[in-house]
Image 1 (spheres, helix red, strand yellow):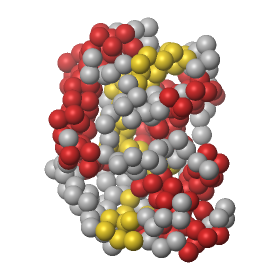
Image 2 (cartoon, rainbow, N blue to C red; image 1 turned 135 degrees about the vertical axis):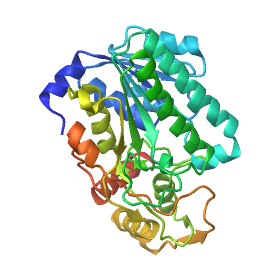
Image 3 (spheres, rainbow, N blue to C red; image 1 turned 30 degrees about the vertical axis):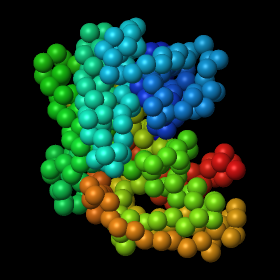
Length: 333
């Protein structure tokens, strides 16, 4: 869904991807390199993986800077001679932030501010950053529209909302153009299934593949706007290439505009995984308590993104899960 104009603009650009060794960041690096961009990746490998970058390390258009966004000097170095920043670096996970709010704040707020300062000082043309659907907090309205939010329900949600406030302030104070992308439950290839804070889809895929029973938090009726990685890549590319001045200095839902509850999700995962291993169809699902900080339902309106960025999501949950399951089956055996 990317035009030749957009590909051409990317091919002549120098783009910094922070958190480029992570799930979303490494997919961005790969896509941008395929379009001919000069890509710099900044990562401290706290949550990202070197294996995600191995295919790019010998590419003359790829530079890896191992460093931490909590260090302003490192951010300045990474932003030097750069046209655009795609800021993906963050400590995700609501439970992680509840357990350790200080580190989440240091990375997600102080690190974000360091990157804004470095972008300002190096005359970055546009600063696109990963915002979060957690910003909607306790707002019960559905679908979620960008200008109606509630109170944050976790330290993580607070940090991502502060990012939006800082981005808006840097435009007003220094003229730095920004675009925030509120990600809704992104999933797909390269998403890590391991660790205490693994996202639900890769975690469940791994458990089903091991014939272990996944545990649903709650009764399974909580629903999410699960968003396949290709839709997220499209939004990032549209954000750095848009020629529409009205599209700048905005935040956008980055989602599909559809929701799936956890019961439906596990049904689909079992269905697609059973095509590779028929025994998975018999794996039972367990239920546990609801997680603190979780909202019951999440559903995005993507009308604003469609109108101002010409966003056209290509994958709904079924198409995305089929591709994701195929990738996991080929890479995690």
